[in-house]
Image 1 (cartoon, rainbow, N blue to C red):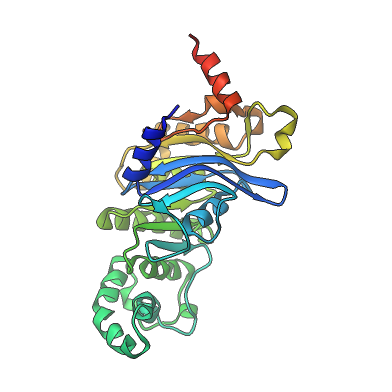
Image 2: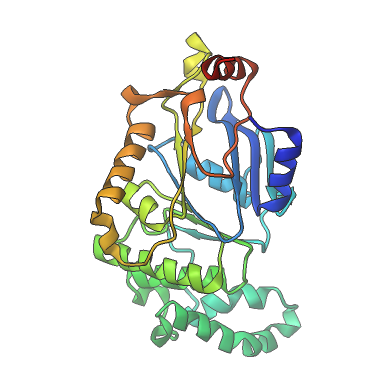
Length: 310
């Protein structure tokens, strides 16, 4: 349970704060009372079954969609429309085919300038763009066009393109989903290196449990598989955050993926979010992260008090 004062403090302290958010399309509820607060510097991964609303949640954070009800805040202010505080990397590479690698990365900086100042802006920011390409290990290909690059190389450029504007939060929607396993693992290591070097806040949506646990300092499990007190109205339920795990900041070695602790956590997430037969009541979710909170309905609050006893 959280008081109004506690929620207000979370909203002011953390970079991203989502409170009591619902999203529906017509009669279909997709997101159902989402409560989430993400601190600066967190690498927050979001995982869940196909169709549970992960990308819908990301679009609300970006500002591409508004909640049907509830509130989303960036740095204590309403999220509003998309702006430069939020960078985004999609699964489908967001590169312009008629621009070189360098010009794709420079584009955000150039467009900030007036029409007459764009040539000068390109000169001024060229070194910064090349440095970003160096960090992404793609600088030697700066003259090439997107069609001359592999999928992994294109995604490196897309990440550099997002980071050069120094967004407050980087949102990534299945960014490595189209890559083969070896390239995907290399991109995971690259992301961790950039996250640490730049002190980024990352909101990373994936369907891959192993990827979520390997990358995240925090794993959010979004799922439509849960039990509440609505009884026959079950078909009206949207997805909730059914688990919220804090993870240690670990070394970048991919060997951790074979450790017993890693395997067990992935199995626990699978049980909690992906298995309809293991659905838990909303008062029994594993919300162990220190910033986790729930805005329960009156009926759910009564059920929680009954469980806790006098």
